Amino acid sequence: EVQLQASGGGLVQAGGSLRLSCAASGFTIDDFAIGWFRQAPGKEREGVSCMHKNDGTIYYVDSVKGRFTISSDSAKNTMYLHMNSLKPMDTAVYYCVADASAMCDKELMGAWGRQAMDYWGQGTLVTVSS
Image 1 (tube, rainbow, N blue to C red):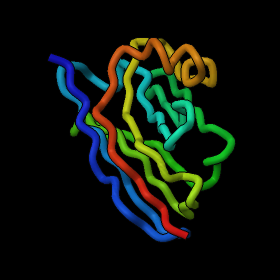
Image 2 (cartoon, rainbow, N blue to C red):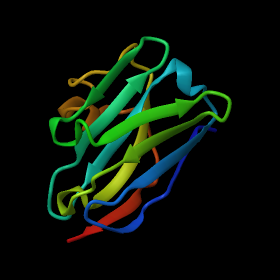
Image 3 (cartoon, helix red, strand yellow):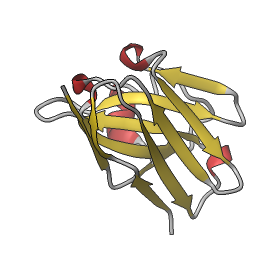
Image 4 (spheres, helix red, strand yellow):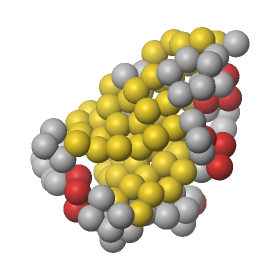
C-alpha cells in the first residue's frame, strides 16, 4: 500500500524556519517526481516545489525561490521541505505528493498536477505569524 505521511508543520513567527518531512512507503521516491503543494484558506492549491532525483530536475514556484529547499533521503525514503525566511503569505496546509512522471517541472506542478498527481499525503498546517 502506498502512503505519504507528512509532518513538521506548526506555528512560527515571520522570518523563522521550519522543516517539513514526508515519509513514503510502498514505492521508492527516487523513481518518482516528488514534491509539495500548499493550499491557503480561500485559495487554490499551489505547486510549491518538486524534484526528481533520477532525472535531476528541480522546480520552485517563484514566490519561494531562495527561501525554500527541497531534498530527499533515499535510505529513509523520505522527502523534506526546508523553509527559511517564512512570511505570513506562506501560511497554508502543505501536502507532499508523488507522481510517476519522468521529470519534475512547472507543468507537473500546475493545473495538471492539482488534479492528477498519483499520490497525496494528508497535509500538515504551517502558520506564520506577523
